[in-house]
Length: 336
Image (cartoon, rainbow, N blue to C red; front, side, top):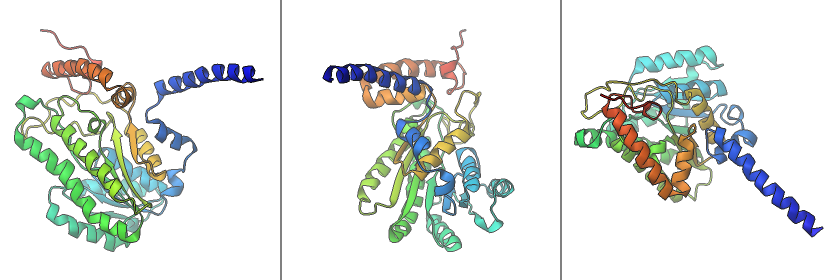
């Protein structure tokens, strides 16, 4: 009998590992998040009626968040600098979801104007009475080599991506601790886990966010119903490349490149909402081979450094040759 059990285990374990390996080849999120997507709560049931404040809601991930949250029945506070674009997003939300005009507040916000954040937060709370979820999504990326980049660009990235996000969080957090419940969800990046060439300042700002919110989470252990979650997406189809900083503050990106190889924004946002509905503290969302790369960084850093150096060299070479940074992994370098 014991021999049969041992034999069965010897057969089952390799099969179990093989199934997980095959699944991993095709997944686009970490196993905790995927498990929640299979057996966890549905966003449609958990997020219905909740008040959700989304920053950076005028385009990209923020815009898609507004649409999917509206379909879930959430009441929305939409913030970004461009009020006309926020009104456009609001109209689309009302067209495709069962919400009323009063269910969506357009609240223009500049993350750099930190002195205005207290007033904006009071306006949001006064309108709905409370805030259930804050999604820190506002920010900008970077496409430039360190040797060519002005220090002003690094300052701007930290002011916007890090300090702007911290400022809004600090305004909303006392409201949530007083209520004893709430969620603060911050869109970081996979480069907040491991840096990438051409994004030294952007990576630094996302590393700063990771450190801040990981520390904050441990400070709030007396508030078990308050979720602090970070989202680490890989390349996603959005306007983030078009709006990225370059080596000078006001110099636009020369080549935005093709976005087709990136993850669809709708899929990324769906996984984010699954994570929020199931209180996932950190979400890795990326297609392969990017997801595998960050698992390597987590568990085999020596091997990851080897891959990083190899891919990073190619990325820089392609960038210098005029090929878009994000498509560099899929494009051969130009030769003279």
